Length: 399
Image (tube, rainbow, N blue to C red):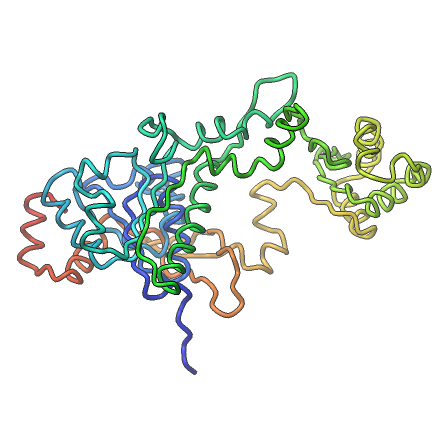
């Protein structure tokens, strides 16, 4: 049987980024068949190698964030390293970078210079504030993007300071916007005969793009969406409710028919039949009353019992999962979202599966995040450097 090519097979990506946004974007390409060559500083590599939980001298996050990639060490701060980088990029389709704007230009690796030798090159550039505007040259991390993009302002409880998710969601959102933009540019180049171009993603803009109707609501109605704790502004009922065993269940019964089913389930037919609660606008005016009624019902049931009853009534719901819950959940397991890999030292490790799921040409987990410089020699040879030249680069600490 003929093996089908992977969706991005034949696409070469040079990843110059570090830490989160750039490498997260590169992971998408690598999982779906692109050759992703990750360029790291010699000696220490990407700082993510040492972040958070460690196994020996390597971050466990590293093994996930950089799977299926080839690691090449290269000092981009020196002229000889920059020349090697240009050689790598000459035959590449995509370059990913998330340095502060102007850094690549300082190294002689700006888009204009690279595109002279490779006019079809696509460059995904991710930064805090984008490549233009009065703040473009300021440093900006995902946390800053979350704050300036509006997400932090609406997150938390009204009587407390804004809070953050315990994740780098701003970087992840920027990466996903970057991947989408790059694939659109790749399609344009391939199908419409377009040239290469820059995909400019600002972290704060990627977050702002998720802010639903907050802008037109402010402009037309003067409304500023505020923090509402566990609830969702303007959509009722949609909240998190406590159970008798100390857990929490999220219930989304904001559709009119679902609301009726929920009220019937919890024994409040009077509310199910109340004409003033027949649509969302009416329910919004009585949000506190409805949340209290639902919370009283969930508090009389343990989480599993509440979920079973809600499922039987076809009311959307879900327990609030910790990672311990996720690992043993049958839906995760059935969807192949908990994968088992073997680390270089023989230890087994659970890692997330691949998203999205393509029915005909799915993504593939080929290997975990590589050792520093593991593929340097292989990649340089593919660019016509011979062993003598490679040994000279090693001696000079260029690679």
